Structures are given as structure tokens and as C-alpha cells.
Length: 378
Image (cartoon, rainbow, N blue to C red; front, side, top):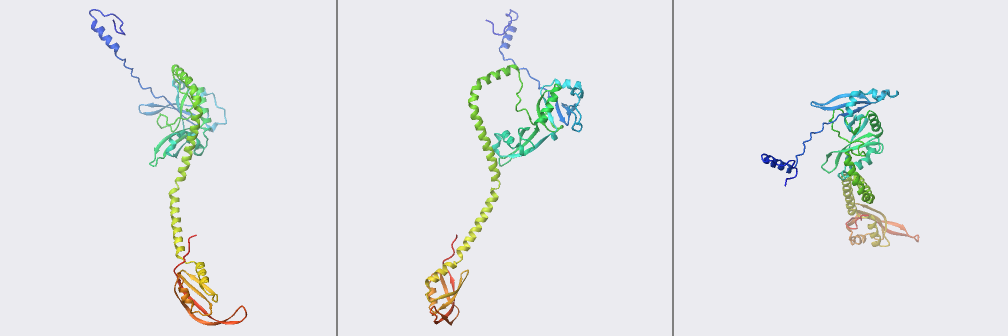
């Protein structure tokens, strides 16, 4: 019985050759080594003029250029037919390339930078889309944009580069190139002397990738099978994406607020220290109302106070009494006073009473030190 892959029966003289052919048929076929596809030309657009840039052994070289539309300086005149503005031989050569890269000069769009929290990496494109009107003159509905992470900071935040182009400009240029039979696959933004490999992908997020007919048929069949499940899970996925986007925006706003936290903490500690100092001073300061309340409670009814001065812990009182000498031991009995003595010699005086009769009294001036009944913190 011959092995699979045999094409002829072995003869007597060729048995060894036949057996080797059978063994070779059993070995897996080596895949053919594919040559790397050459990098296609790049169309660099600046103010109506398209420059064709291609890779050469010495680097990037300009292999041709053509006028796609009248420059802005002559915008008052109608443009001529495009096939008259572009060299036929150059256009015919470019038509052989599929999905050319179209790069706009930096002045036609906007290249900017932004700083985002680490949590924004999961939905970077959506978060930048919500902030696009603050980074560029356009909203996400007015411009194509793309984001590239350029650096990560030690605190976890990420630095990103944002490129944006006005949709109306991109659509107009692509339509004019399509009239020439040139197909644009990817839109970039940058300088002409940059690498041919595009850095950004502007306007390609909603363009399906072309492939073979078999691949499209297989993808269509799989999509039909998954359509029912996707319809059931679509609402939940959308709701979760909305929640995640809200959380990312809330995290970004919270991080902005927390950036001022060290300064607020320093101010709070300074206020606390100042409040503690004031409270200590208040506790160390005697209360004039408390001293006056004790004096009115302990002094006899025939004693009249005409003055009371309290400076720090020094108390001075003056007034009239029938006899001033008993006042010293009376005040010394108070636990909040000490070092009670006459501040000035007593003198005799005559006062008219409520009945109109004049009575002889002593004018006194006493001094004491307050050691209790300090002020309280409000």
C-alpha cells in the first residue's frame, strides 16, 4: 500500500528514490518566506499643494507634487479641473497603491498636550473627547482626534499628546483625492520631514478595514450569530461605559481638588495653633464679671463700690464703708484673692443717706492679686 502523496509506483531501480519522495510527502510543508511589503508613498498636504514623499535608501525624498486645489490666496477664483492640475504620470503611479497615508501640515490642525490621572487610561479616547472643546477650538463632533500616551509621571498621572483636525477639511481633501482615483487609508498630522510611518490615526475609527471576500463573509457570519447576544448585552455595556466615564471625570475633578490639600492643611494647622494660643491666654486671664460677682456676694450691704479695675491679675477696688479695716480679712478669705492690702490710706467722708441724713463713712482703696476664677473658652 502506497503512502499518501505518491504519484507513481516504484520500480526496481528507483525504489530508494521513491521511498525518499514518500518521506518528504510526510514532512510539513515550509511556509514560503514573504518579503516585507514596501512602504507606500505619503501624501503631504499644505494649503492646496500635495507633496509625494517616499522612502529612499538615503532617507525620505520628495518624488513629485501637484496642485489639488487653489491656495487660499486665490480662493476668490473657481478651481480648474483637478485632472488638469495634477501630472498624469504621477497620478497613475499613485493609483497603484491602496490606502495611501494622507498627512496634513501642523498649521491645518492642532497638536497639544494634556495631563490626566492614571485611571483615565482605560477610557482615554472617551475622556479626551469630553475635554476636546477645552483643548482645541472644536468639539468631538466637529473634529477628528487621536491620543498618544507620551510619558508616565512618578505619581501615576499620564502625559498625552492630542492631535485634532477639522472634519470638514479632511472630508474635502479626501473627496478631491478620490476624484483623482486616489484612495486614502489613514490620516496623520505632522511635519513633512518626519518619519513616513503615521503617528496618529485621524478619522479612521469608523472606517471598516478592507480584507478578502472570504474574510468578510466569515466576519459577517460570525456577526450574525452574535447579533442576538450583543443586542441583549448592549444596553448593559453602554450603561457601564457611561458609569466608568462619569467615574473617570469625577476622579479627575477630585484629583484637581486634592492638589491644593497640602496648602489647606498648613493653613488649618496655623489656625489651630492660633486658636490654642488665644484659648491659653483666655484661660490665664481672670474674669472681671466673676470677680465682681464674688465681691457683691461677700461684701456687707453698707459697702459701696465706686470703682473696680482688673489688669491681668491685678485688682484695684475703691468705695465707701462704715469701717474699712474689716474689709481686708474679709477679702483674704476668698480663695480667688491673695495679697490683699490698702492701696491708699483711708479717709473720712460724709454721705447723705436715703432718708436725707448725712452719715460719716470711710473712703477706702484696696489692691489684691487674682489667683482663681480664670476666663473660660467660649
